[in-house]
Image (cartoon, rainbow, N blue to C red; front, side):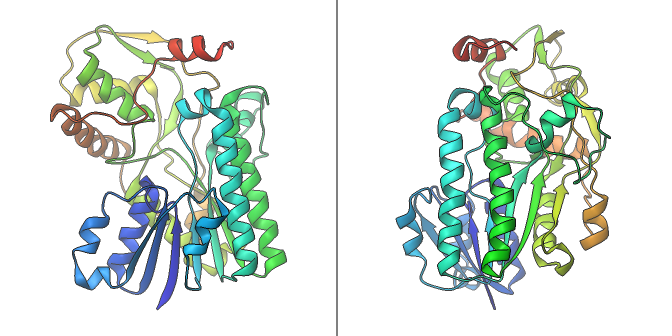
Length: 348
C-alpha cells in the first residue's frame, strides 16, 4: 500500500483528508502537525484503521522535527501553515516566518528523502490583489496573474508566503525529480473549521454577543463557499491524477454569495429577530472572489455537490451547538474590524 504523509494533518482540511484516506483502506497514513487532530481518537480506537495510521506531533517549522519520520513516503500533502485573517493582521511576522520555514524545511527534507509526488496547498489570497486592482474575469481561472497590492499591509503576509510556496515546490520538483501539484483553496467551510473565519465569527456574535442591530461587515463583498467534503475529494483527486502533474487548480465552488445574504441567512437559521446594519470590512479584504473550477472538472472530474446554503447550514449548526453548550474559544475568536484597525494603525 502507498505510504502517505499529511503535513498539517491536525488542521481543518488536513484531518478530514486523513479520515478520508484511512476510510478508503488502500493506504497507510502519517498525520504530522504541531497539534493533534480532533478525529484521531476514533481512528485509533478502530483496530482496522489504527494499524494503518501514525501520528507525529511536533513543530515542523523546526528542522529537527522531520527526523521523526522513519519511513519513505510515496505522496506528501503539504498543508501545514499559519492561517486566519486576524492572525495575519495582528501577527504578520509570525505568519510569514512560520509558513516560509515550513516550506523550506519540507523542501530540504525531501531533497534527501525522495518522494513520488507532493501536493502543496495554496490560497485564493494569491490573486486577491489582482481582483481589486485590475479588470479580471469572474469566476477567476488559474492563469490570473498573482499580485500583492501593498507590501506594507500585514494582510498580504499570508499571500506572500503562499506565492513563495507555489514557486518553491514547482521548481524543486523539477530539480529533485518528483511530481508536484498546487491547489488553491477557495473559502472552505464545515464543522470545526476553527474560530478565525467569517462564519464562526458571525455565529459567535449571534449567540454570545447578542448584537442588535447586527453589523454586517463588508455587506456587499462576495465569496464562494465550498464544503469540506467537496474540498477533500477535489484535493485527493488532484493528487492522484496524472493529468495534474505540474499544474495549479482552484478547489472551491462557483456559487457566489454576498456577505449580506450570508449573514441574514445565518441569522434566519439562528432565529434572529433584530435589525441589521451595514458596516466596514476587515483591512485588506477584497470586494469579490469566485473561482473558475472548470480546469479541475476537466482534468480529474472534480464535482462539488454541496450547495452553499446546505454547506452554511451544516457549519452553522456545529458552531451553534458549540456555543450553546458552554464551550469556550481557545484561539481565534471574533475581533471587530474597528478594533483591529486601532491596533495595527493603518487605513482601511
